[in-house]
Image (cartoon, rainbow, N blue to C red; front, side, top):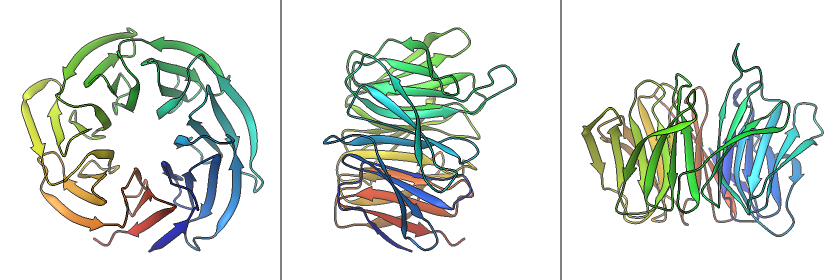
Length: 294
């Protein structure tokens, strides 16, 4: 479809749930774009000279959470045309590398944010009340990626300690641990099955079922580090991006390659729209928007 010229390296991207807006995170803040016209509609300054590492749109599309190379997450109201900061979620960590959002439920009336911290902890935030509920401690180095299982009962996290961990959210405890030969840079949980896909500091993507680890697939088409990964909302396919400048789409879970796109620079981030119609990637000084034709 086209490029969004960000002017700084784009470390984080997000598409609103209604597919109207794209958010790109770079040095110092986030830019908000109209998806159809590809025009910038707002700047969201959060940090001064450090980088945004994660940006998540909350259910309802009126709020976003932004995290990066500082000790705070920033909650923004983006629903009224003129974005404004609603709050700053401050913790004792140097950086947030990734986030996942669990929607509100009858039991938990606020969306929950799971934030991967540079000290290896996973901070759990009540977003509505801006309160730190708990921290999961297990990774020996920085926690780099996170996703929530579709039934909301478990959390998967990956770390620079070369390990993927699965946490029981009802018991607040680690229940499974999977060591790898390389650092874990990206992961995703299928929304329609138990399969986990993991992108490593190698050219490997590993796909496995935590309950049946013998059901595993290794995907090896990337030529360098796998930097981001995202499942489609229907769970039929997922995308990966890499230091090799490639965007790839794979059939889930076994990994038949559906398409490949080469860009001019390493691709650091990606997101897929809720209707599985658009993919957006973040790389050097720009985001790239793709429209899928089925």
